[in-house]
Length: 91
Image 1 (cartoon, rainbow, N blue to C red):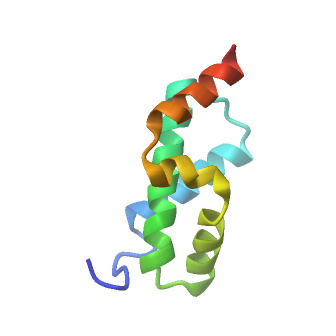
Image 2: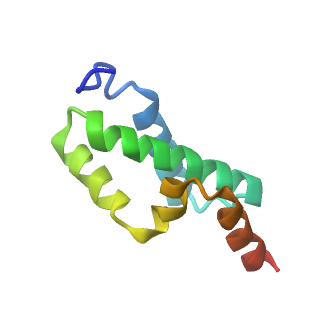
Image 3: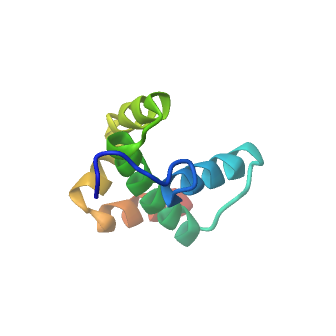
């Protein structure tokens, strides 16, 4: 992949980030499986945009979001820990 995304803002990363932001703005309630899927998709969209986005404001925002410890489980690929975290919240 090139250093700069040639598809922005029509790329899947931007679409994913906008989609979930719209859901958040509308207070959409998600099921556990949908939350896990959303986290996975958002994490990968943030990672891609933080490196390849030609919009420097978006690129910096995504990079700043990834500094949050919240994403550590995703970075480590610890999906079992993510599932346990949600299972505890639902109990």
